[in-house]
Image (tube, rainbow, N blue to C red):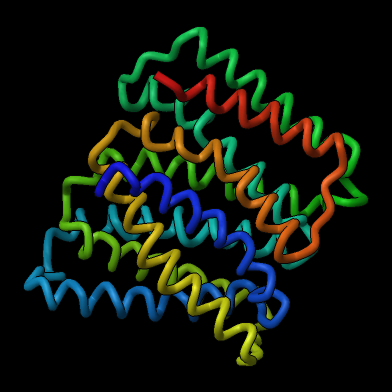
Length: 282
């Protein structure tokens, strides 16, 4: 069963970019994420009780998981949601954050003592070349500058959080760790809403369906699979599956959201995917 987890993860994680668009069209992105992770935290709390796993544990371990949640659910998802809310195309947002495997491989060397090969550096060059092809002619027109900045912050956050989670993945049971991560994400977005945002949520049918998808299939499904894969495998091996997400998300965006792709965008997607694959394959 575990062999098909990466495929399930790719489909669910890619679909999250698609349902983000109807969510941010009907809500403030940070209010929506606070709402989402309140129910995610509640769900993992109840699941932990069902498994007779205590939430009361070492304060340091709790703080480590909360920090992981702030990075994963706060800065990463906050950056992606905000960028899409101000006009960043879904497929390009997915492309940028999926440079994560390249950065993870670079940082895994000094932090996790994983060897960085010449092959990985070639992948880095191809990955950033592909991203430049997509971004270079569109910044300021098709791509909002603030959206680009927010997506880069999201990229850095998910990279750091993946490495951090690998270091702490054995500290707590998975459901307990997921609870504290969801709690950290919820707290982060509540603070953003209180001090920086103008919160609103239009609870129409589209929002409810899209949010239900993200809570049930992405947060409970894809994220749990990701945490399981990080725990079982090396950080660099785990993130190698991310190279399929840009093309999968772009195809979904074309099919469901009618987003257009130029020939240059397509070339950029291909070059980036090849680069990330080269950088992360065994």
